[in-house]
Amino acid sequence: MDASKEHIISTADLLEVEDLYTQFRFDDGVVRAVDGVSFSVPAGKTVCVVGESGCGKSITARSILQLIDRPGRITGGRIWWRSAAAISSAERSKRPRRSRKSTDADEQATDDSGVDLVALDPAGDHLREIRGGEIAMIFQEPMASLSPMYTIGNQLIEVIRLHTPVSKAAATDRALDLLAQVGIPRPKHTMDAYSFQLSGGMCQRVMIAIALSCNPKLLIADEPTTALDVTTQARILDLLRDLQQDSDMAMMFITHDLGVVAEIADEVVVMYLGTVVEQGPVDEVFEHPQHPYTRALLASIPRMGAGARQRLSAIQGQVPHPFNYPQGCPFHPRCPEAVEGVCDRVDPPTVWLGERRRSRCVLNDPEFLAETEPANEVSR
Ligand SMILES: Nc1ncnc2c1ncn2[C@@H]1O[C@H](COP(=O)(O)OP(=O)(O)OP(=O)(O)O)[C@@H](O)[C@H]1O
Image (tube, rainbow, N blue to C red; front, side):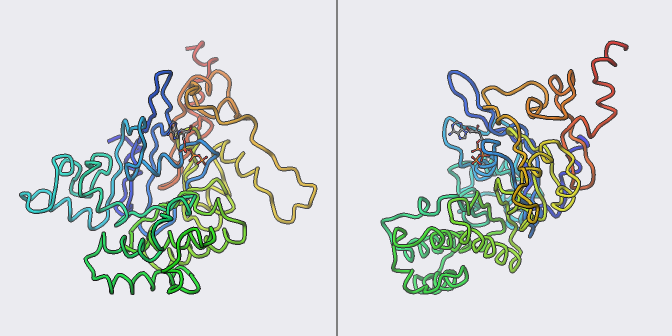
């Protein structure tokens, strides 16, 4: 096992994404949406994934549950799911098959410490049980995720009964409890409403209730507040933070807003052009950012009390389209600290700066930089 993997694997990690590649293949090129991503989510903690638009945050999240539309495909890597249920299911899969529909792919996906979600049969029972059961996901557009054809109550009851064998009456009681838990003022009234009769904020609360209905171990939230007004955004964030703190649920929260990260994250994963450029405990990353991209992102946040005339520094240039993936460090064309002849030529090494802290930049590895600089190569 190489040194970088030793750091990633920890028994406390519930989810471990290991060198994940997801690509969209077209006649005229390949979009390398996720290009060798590794990170982990510890049980009960909130990990925020940040980066500008198009950096691969959503495709990483969707890859976890195999929700990638064609022509997209996971082309490499593993995604270890290590909940207690996944581990006991791994043990079950070693016994002779019984009633549960377990395919060869599902059996091969398991080892003693969990299940590799990438290797599960996309149409098999195992992935279906995990999706919406142990791992729930909420999206940016709550209205689009709810059906306008059925009442909120019907949709909530259906999800509850899909994953738990309870009577309709018991599912109705649970639905009412969940609506109250997510702060819906008149749960009984809302049970009979349709999504188009509710505000965006109320729809997102309903989606959170649906997500929580099976007591997930991990909630993946893909920019869940972006489509909402600022006040509603703050309320939904408070709700998610309270729910997460009251349970042992872990959260993977995708956002481009570092203000949100500062409020809710335990750890942060900074993505750029399909890669993780920096990762670590949120306080350490915010106080001592190691990657020039993280520094640029942080410099672009407006600061309270800096006065009306403060200048926001925008990051120069744009995220290149993954059809035009630059050679060397993916950030070098926009990087104010790029080293000519190095960053435009070689892949930056991943440098571990602590047990859960790393950065992917030659500046963090002076030895590698010294060895790679063109002047040194000539003299060798
Ligand atoms: N269905 C698709 N077909 C082709 N390319 C896609 C598809 N979906 C995403 N991509 C490409 O994959 C890359 C990563 O996209 P992704 O949606 O993960 O970015 P993101 O960081 O979540 O951005 P945003 O914050 O705007 O949601 C982008 O270049 C995007 O254009």
